[in-house]
Length: 470
Image 1: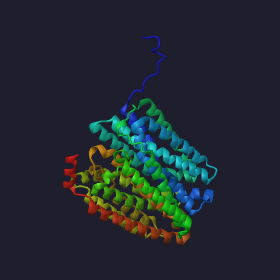
Image 2: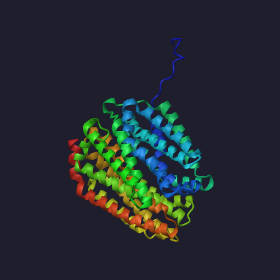
Image 3: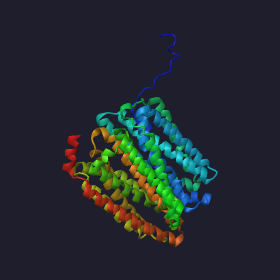
Image 4: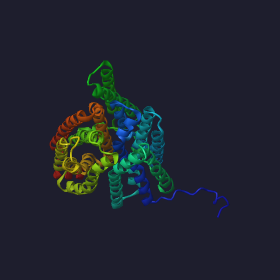
């Protein structure tokens, strides 16, 4: 042995299963964030004596950077290393969680939420990309299936844990629980994950990311103010127009950059790709809005504790987690058109069932049936939607298409949340009435998503031909 051999630092020993564990721990931070926060919103609002628009920003301060920067986060990982960006995003998320837990006022909580969104935009795409580079063949499919299943399971149990913590410890505890998960992900990735990158595929589209962020901020801010006031004053109009102009400039920049854009517009020439993304925006926007409102209404108007509200939503996540893989296999045989048409229509029926919820309603007779129907509709759509989006583009654009569809889903939730001010501002019976109106609007939007699927998505034979061409 050479004299300096003992002093030389040990190289990372790649270990696929430990890499999978690191990716699961990191991505779980983002998977559980929304479902945990929803049951804690009433407590956060009471703690800071916040208004309706401020409650909306507790959600959207996270969704805005996540929606706008998700594709850029993946491109940065391609260029600078996926393991490095996974660890950086996870560390950023953990630091932001600590800031949220210790926030002395609402402003600091919102700052923490923004940083959480940036961290999630870095860690989410790179957790999946790291799995793709670590595993091959059937093992890759198995790893991604475990990654998705654990994420769904975490989302199922998160409302229960969050509700218990809010009841017995206080809402800051929902942010403290992120710290051990983040520490575990960073330590395991540092020791066992091999670095990977793909510099040729990198799209570090900084102008596009900046314009998308500012444009979405302007539109979201305008909609948030309007939804509370229900009047369009000069400030609201100015913010909305500025946001739309910036989004228009974003599209112009993306068109000029061509294949170097973080959102290559050429992909939207495919009718199926455009249709499925429009469907995603509508369906996930409607679903996200109702998933925010349902526990809020159960706590504020029906007297549920946060733990009871978490229990009320548990069947939803379990049904989606169990049934989605089965629907993925079925969609592979029959194509995406039928499940993507039926799924949103069933979700719309679930929204209509939920209009039976009143302040004194029985959980078993009103809430549970609506939750089961909602879960069944989403289970019909989730897996076929992903496979249909990926099947509508050639293989070299699969990663970009998947990331873009994820960003579109979160943008739908961002815009929908910005429109909920009137509901969140209401109290008592007025809250129930406003909730019912929101449910009717969500049902109409979900039904429209089903119609779009029928008009734009091909059947099994069309998808088979597309796969053969790719």
